[in-house]
Length: 450
Image (cartoon, rainbow, N blue to C red; front, side, top):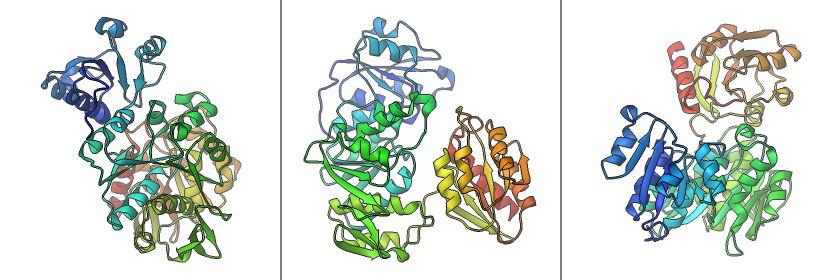
């Protein structure tokens, strides 16, 4: 970990706890900041707040005092990524020109290791995992961090110059960056997502673009040549552009006559890949583009791609019960992700979908639902998804209260050889704390059937 004096003696407000806020507060305390924490959860229920208070950090719980910035003479704000910019304290900080950052910016300041940053609307976790596994197979001492579950502030404290940090980044995290500059930056795709947070697709795209904005000619900007929005965003980067594509030859990774290439070099036969789903080819090509820039051997790439079958909650095969195959794709929190999941199958499919209503409709899902024989809905968006199914002429449509009930309802409507797919096309927050919780409930219900 680098010794930095950016925050020495400075009044820094950590706004919102959870894992990232806790780690940020602890790191700031370690580098000499005068840390104040403000979290909405009441003190009595707030174990993280008690933990910080025990090491001498001032903690304010249960509300956001509107005079906090002025009262404490705050000089920096480190914001939990989930807190919107409409928050009164965030708005006040911006009006006062107080820097508002997320903990990944803080992690960048102290990291001795090079950072590989991965973002996009879909496929981030799968691609991040592939990159990590390929680097590890090649003996390059990678660490994995960011939106994938390992808080960046914690991971970089253990990193040395001999490591490389593979960091999954959300638009929420990137929006809170100022100087953040990964050595290799990867943008997978852009789709309408999180518009309730960002307001417009343009603002969402600009948040994603921040992964490139501070790069110099010494860094690499890896991009999806199939995605017009990504191609537009990468044009402003000063990094060396490296493309990947499933349908054209590019200077990065691509497929030609059944073989995977990087530049003019054959990596392996595409048929040897075991990860299911056509949509995962883009993720694979993206990962190859990144690791080849770090000199990873083809044997290491092939070893991963001939064994890696996917990440939990991302088109995860769960079990076969009396001829019915169950798949958990709880991470599919938008229409594009569910469309790609559906395209991975040709068998008759029962779709389990629904969740948080962000104001959008689901008409774009229609083209992917040709083989869907039944739809089970739940959550706030149930009526909207039922409308789509009805317009497609799907006769078996049933609304249930939750994911567990959806599993049993789907089984009752199914036949042997059917696929039963949880791919909600919505965030989980109307009923479940996380998509992981939603997926685990699905898995447990399937095992109960067995």
